[in-house]
Each structure stands twice: as C-alpha cells, then as structure tokens.
Length: 161
Image (cartoon, rainbow, N blue to C red; front, side, top):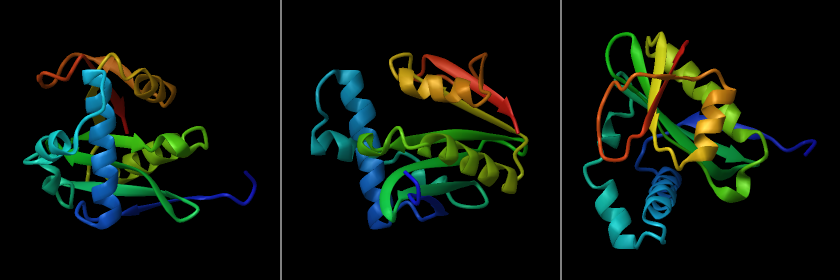
C-alpha cells in the first residue's frame, strides 16, 4: 500500500458523498440488525429526522474519509454538553476495510471533538457490531454505564480525550 493515502475532511451532511455514505451506513447497520438487506424506503425512513443536522459546529462535526480520493467512510461527533461529545455514524465501506482507515478516522473524530471543546468521548453501539466494538477497544475505549437509552443500544463506551 505504499503511496496509498487516506484523507479526512469536515463536510456538510447533505453533500453527494456524505449522503451516499450515510445511506450506506444505515443500510449496513439496519440490514445486519434485520438479518436482510434494508430497502431504499427503509433507509429513507431511518434517515428522516435522525438529527444529523446537529453534526456541524458548534454542536458537532461530520467527517468524510477518502481513500485515494474516493469516498470510503464517514463519522460524526455530537456535543452532548460542554465536556462530552458522542461518537456517531462511524462507518467504512466494506471494500475499504483493512487499510488502516478506521483508526485514522477515529483519531480525526477525536481531534474534531477536542476542537469543539470536548474532554471526553462517549458512544453506544450494539453487541452484534463486533468489528466496531473491537475497533473502539483497540483505541482505548472502555465500557461505561449507560448514558442514554434506546432500542438499538446494547453497550456504551467512553474515553478521556
């Protein structure tokens, strides 16, 4: 992979690349939950009113990850209060996994949270998202008590920034 590079940039959630990545993210996590591919209508419904408009300063930030210029992944941070940011919508398209991008994306998201004033990052996820849970553990996230509730939350993690 010599010469191959990742690039990470803040981007509006409604750009074509960000929108496509958000749709792929939702399709992936919903499909895994339902154990079948999500339909376009289900993806539309899941993204409707999901609060993504808060992922812009000063309340948050949304990043797009590109591998050799191609949109490969995304992630966001949402300020929960003056000290805590929530990691959300972290996703790499399957064809780009195994190239070191997930860890780099986490690092850039943590930097974005610090720039917004966060001193701690928290997140919630599901038990079946084993790759995500392994990624968070590898990068210093530890299980914490639940800080929120919802139907698709099984485990919560936190990390001091």
